[in-house]
Amino acid sequence: MSHFDVIIIGAGAAGLMCAAEANRRGRRVLLLDQSEEVGRKIFISGGGRCNFTNLYASPDNFLSENHRFCVSALARYTQHDFISLVDQYEIEWHQRDHGQLFCLGPAKQIIDMLLAEAKGVDIQTAVTVKTVAKSEAGPFEVKTDRGDFSSEALVIATGGPSIPKMGSSTFGYQLAKQFGLKLIEPRAGLVPLTFDAETLARLDGLSGVSVDATVTHGKIQFTEGLLFTHRGLSGPVILQISSYWRPGDTITVNLLPEIDLFEYLKDAKQGQPKKDVVSILGTLLPARLAQRMTNWSDSNGRLADMPDKTLQRLADHINRWQVTPDGSQGLRTAEVTVGGVDTNELSSQTMEARSVPGLYFIGECVDVTGHLGGFNFQWAWASGHVCGQVV
Image 1 (spheres, helix red, strand yellow):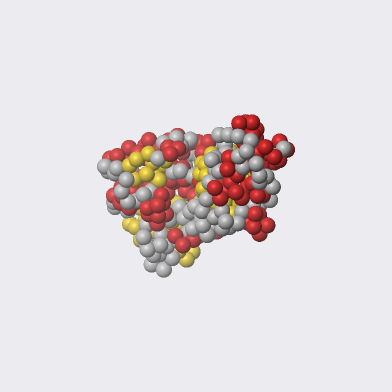
Image 2: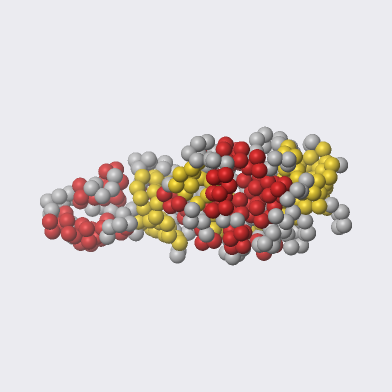
């Protein structure tokens, strides 16, 4: 049985960062991954350009049952620290909307950078972990199809079950349960929402139509692009709200967040009474959407012939459309998994399990989930870095 100071299971963003930091401290590190290549989610992220962090990352951009848990790691390894690392490797990047930072070149540059930082780490891919065990006084023992390994520190960086085609799994959750740690029920996050047959029939013909919209769920609100699909709604604003949405919840969609449509239509009725309602609405929204919404609210015809009550009904459909999705597209297409290892089981300073000395959980398998826009990578870098400083 080969012995290492640290074994890290999972060579994604968090695992690579942890390995690099532990390696920098002179630790003998073994990094294992079931996939044939490391960093597969990094490789596909941002359309192949890797949205590697966000300029405005803060604890407010993260969901968790314990909102304060992420504060320490994010403060000790910030987005500016990662940007400095990217700059050291002369990787060109640019800023998009809402502070999102992307590589100008391929995402593989980020993977190559992390591998360079982890030079000296024993990295083994296409490995199947069979069992993990620990005697009371002894080291962790990891049995694989490539041999058996032991270490004093074991780091779990296997992510959640989102996007299974990228090699994701529930391994981290299974291991947490094995060692008696509690889980916050995992569910799909950053995922399109779906509608029932009746709602889809009302929206027939709108697939592919996009607008900027404000979507509200309770006290949470986002304003970004919204896309109608053949199954329901998608686009950045829907992905954002989906992380908060639970089955049975109603969301409120404002398709014209900058305009009070009722007041707009009343003014148009005074100035252009012979104009059709759909023509007026078509100056504000895509034509197909304008037509569908006027049909839905039974408000077709000239403005002069429309009582204010009818105009109000149309305005409510546009400015305050309340809809109850019947589900989401699930973990198959979700960008992240919400939930995971209960943060009450872990130290926010080190990511170590309180009840199992030497066992650490980092990255997506922990109950910390970022908003869309580079925040989940920043959590991976931060949690991996602080863990790598102590293992």
